[in-house]
Length: 92
Image (cartoon, rainbow, N blue to C red; front, side, top):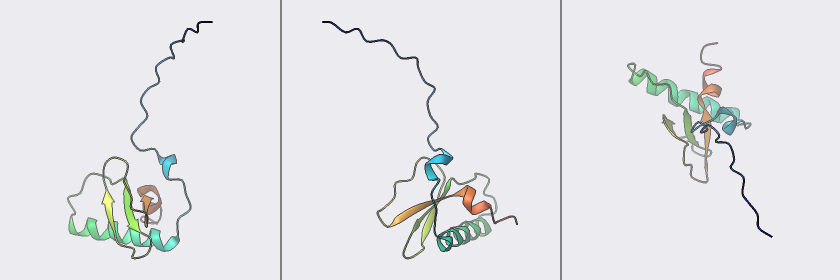
């Protein structure tokens, strides 16, 4: 018996990063640290016009870096705090 494969309709490419990729509960201390990292960066670089995707942060030391493009590659002890969680309390 021979099988004929059917062509699948082309799907539009998915964006590199989707908000749903980061829908996890994070420690409030990590969110505070991520917010402080962002605030410090913005104070030092007020000309910043590109919005970051978020902060890759170490769960134990709370040291982190802003991520501006692509999906972050994290070390085992790191997690990603999306900018949507950081900014929720920035302007309140």
